[in-house]
Every structure is written in C-alpha cells, then in structure tokens.
Length: 292
Length: 345
Image (cartoon, rainbow over all chains, first blue to last red; front, side, top):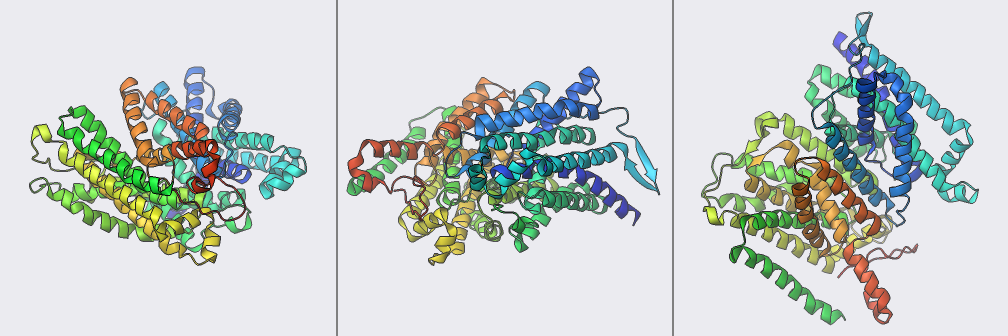
C-alpha cells in the first residue's frame, strides 16, 4: 500500500510536468490543426539550453526558464513563419506532420553535432534533495516543477481567457472562417499561438533535464508520450490533456513501481489503444470542435 | 491517348526491371549492388506504404513496426541454421501472410480515427513494437540484439540472392499497386481518400477495403524486413524498428507522388543514394541528419504533391486540348466541395 501511494504521488507530480508540455502541443493543434511532432525535440533543445546555461554560466536551472522561454517562443514563431505558413494545400494535416518531423530531425542533428550522443543531465546542488512527509518521499525538484507547471498552465489560461489575443485564439479554434471575417489576423494568431505552444517546452525541458538523463535522441521517447497524452485527452482540448497527463503519469509510475520500470511506457500505449477502441476521439474529444 | 498509355506502361515496366536484372549479371561492383539492394528495398517499402498511405489516404507512420516484426521473425527462426541458404526466402511468404493477418486488428482499431490522429496512433504502434523488442529479452535478445546464421553463399555472388529477393518484392508491390489502380478496390480507396463519410454513404464497403489495403501493405513491409534482417545478419531493436525507416518510406512516396505507381519508386531512387552520399560526406557526425531534414523540408515546401503529379499538372497546363483525358491523371488537384474521385493511371 505504501509503495502504491508513493507511486501515485510521484505519478501526479510527473504528470503535472507532462501536462505543461502537452498543453502546448494541444494548443498548437487547436489553433492550427497541426500535430507538432517537434515538441519532443524542442523540449530536449530546452533541456540542452538549460544545461549550457547551468554548466557554463552557473544559472540556476529554474531561473534559466526565464531566458529559455523567449528563445523557444522565437524558435516556434520562426518555424511557423518559415515552414508551416507556406503550406497552402488541401492536406496541410499530412504535410505539417512531415514538416514538424523534419524540424525534429534537424534539431536532433544540430544537438548531436554540438553535444555528441552521450547521456547527460542537469545536476544542481539540490537535485537529489527530498522531503519526507508522513513517510512519503517528495523530491524537491519534482515538487517545484509541479508547482511551476501549475503556474505556467494558469498563465496560459489567463492569456487565453483574459486577453484580446486569447479571445482571437479561441475564436480561431472555434471557427477559423468566422474569426477571420470578424477581423482576426489568422497569420498572427497562428504564429504567436505556435510560439506559445513551443514556449512551454522551455520549462518542460529544464525540468526534464533535471529529472532524466537525456541525449539528442531522447525526443523519440518524449514525443511518443506527449502524443499519447494529447490524443487520449482529445486533440485540441487543454483540459483533456491535463487530465490525460496526470492519469498517464499515475498509470506509468504505478506500473513502474509494482511491475517493472521497463513496462511503464508500455502501459501508456496500451491505455491509449483501449481508450481509442471505446472512444475514437479521445476522452474529451467529442466536446472540442475539429479534433478530427 | 488511353491506348498509348497502356502500351507505354508495360514497356516502361519491362525496361526498368530488365535493367535491374542485368546490372548484377554484368558484374557490377559490390558497393553498387549494396546501394541498389537498399534502394530497391526502400522502393518496395514506399510502394507498399503507398497502398494504404497513398491510395487510401491513411498516412501510417508506424509501418516500420511490421518491418521489425518481419526482421525478427527471420532472426528468430533462422538464428542457428539457414538450411542451405535459400530456405529463409521461401519462409517469407508465410511471414508476409502471418503479419498481414496480425495487422488486421491493429488496422481496425487505428483506422477508426482519421488522418492526423491515425498518424499518431500508428507512431504509438512503432514505439510499442520497439519497447517489446527491447524488453522481451527471451525472444528478441533485447538490446544485445539477435543474429541470423550466415548463409553459405559464394563470396563473389554473395549479394545476388538478396538483390533478387528485394527485386521480386518490389515487383509484387508494384504489381499490387497497378492492380489497385485498375480494380474496384482502387476505386473504393480513391473514394475513401476523397471523402470517407460520403463513400460510406453511397455503399462503398469502407472498412473491408481499408483493411485489405492495410493488411497487404503490412505483409509486404514485413517481407522486406525479413530480407533486410537476413542480409545485414544482425538485428538490434533501434535499427529494426527505426523511426527513420518509417519516415524514409513516407518521404519517398511524398517526393515521387502519392497514389501513383512510379512515384514511390522514383522517390526511393533519388533519396536512398542521396542519403548514402550524405552519410559519406558528413561521416560519422550527426550532421547528416540535419542535411536529410533540410532536403526533406525543401521537398515538402516546393513539391508538396510530389514530382510525378507536378509534372503531369505542368503537361496538362501546356496541352489544354487533352485536358479532359488527363484530368483523371492528376491527384487531388481540384478542391471543389463535391466528391472528386481521382484515379492515377
């Protein structure tokens, strides 16, 4: 029982971080109907930026998020502007999959060239510190990361609900044509929305880098998990992706604790297939327009 | 016009395969054969992918899972002895049929979703297979890999059996592709690609046709995986179930032109040598990944519909007189609200 509760705590904390990365991805899908296969690579890019800032300049990994977030925002805007905007054909859905995959490969190539393929991680002095509460271990990094993710998700929520930009984003998600007729600049919304989505990879990357060893090829593991989460939550639904992320975090950490760590990712995929058998549009997909 | 097409078609196929058959017989050096084996393999893979990804419009990104399963099937059965060398080739049809059947439930679940979600679900399939290959150590050997017993072929003709096996697979894949274009199945697939709901509405047996395309496609890919495993001799999870193989087939089909007979083949004959060149030019450094990604992006940005459809569109514009005949030859060119059934000849 103790092990199970411990696993659930760990799962919720991990799930929070995945929720942040996945919400960026699902936001991008909601606005542009683009499945961003580069999200995993961008997280790894964020992790390497944090690593560089930490080892060479001594910037605290959590503080470095303030620097890396704008960088990844600009990367996202650049990718949208240069590579996705020109796609003007009937099958943007398929072509954008390939474009974002190519971006992922390109990032992997550059990172391998710059850093080599050896596994590395970001190890601040407090990396292994943890509290013991009622006999349960809560690691500091995981806890702060969880809180940070909640804060970022809250910020994202405020941007979407309380700003003029957020209104135009929501209008575009609901009905792109009407939104444009009412004067929403679709290109601007897409570019900034894509940027916001990729910016979540900065915080995600910093945390990922502290919790895991990574190399440039790690983005495959990451993207498979993120995709599972966004599909499970119903593509385009931020709430759905948060629920799915926490659910997946718990499922995989319970499997990891009770069965074996090597099967934890596997449980992710099996849950996805089972859910798709019953609900082909994901858990919350039916409520969001244009998920399929 | 139609008459000349049907006469040019077989001639083109004949010359193409005759050339490929002659190349090893006239004593081409080993490195050419080696490159050609991989080129033909990718041509066969891309043609097989095209059956489901092109004709049916379901862009599977998980086909390498079947490739890996085929590879491991050969690796596991023939790990100790290859029985004179040719038995594994005769086992291939069995593997193809078995994997084709195995793929049906997978296809049934995943094709309940459409385009982009389908792509994601099939990516998941890729990672499931890779995880299994790593974790089922008793069967696959895990990260240590599995190996096929070395075949007792004579040194100077060592590559020949693999070369011709791949060539036969390519011929089968192209034959089925050709059949798809001419048959009711092909028409059904074209309607599914254009608008699945309407196709269902007018009585096309959507699920059955999709499953046939998926199963045939998966079976062919598995057979290519089997030959590959036998040729390279060693099977590691990260190479047998490599996302780059999936992306390779998809990209080649895109480059040449989806839902065309020659598109995937053309794509493979351009990209595989290019890939080899990049790997040579940039050596061990991973910069070749970057170069590959760049080529990849250029293709999608400037030739989003592929070489062959772009060319046939140019021709159509230049010769308006026969536009009505060739209107059928283009692919998804019109974007009207009505259901457009386009069939590539």
